[in-house]
Image 1 (cartoon, rainbow, N blue to C red):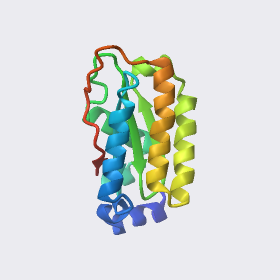
Image 2 (cartoon, rainbow, N blue to C red):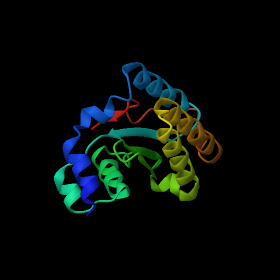
Image 3 (cartoon, helix red, strand yellow):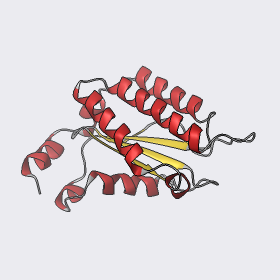
Length: 165
């Protein structure tokens, strides 16, 4: 357990770290997700999380494990084509994970998602939060349109707005 990290999570309230995304940023991100999903069969969910609960810190939970918990809790796996994508942003640690459901994971390697994550983290270190998320959505859209193109009937199965935790 990293004591410095634990103290940061326990002393900084979640809302404080989430202030980097204004309402207009969230609206732009929602619009980008909606537009993206017209070009492919993937379904995005974006989770923006501030501080973690004590138990997750005590158990030394990884960012990937936390993302997986949100993936399940939000039902990202519950799409007809197994085409859910979770973009998880841990705001205090400036870490990002992208989890793809099995339908997409068969076609797009995890290394491609990891590259998008590292680019987002670099943008976040420069305080370019909105641009980092929008660029990631654009990059993910290109991958999904190539490997998982839209059908004529392309339903929107998951909500497009970001989830703030």
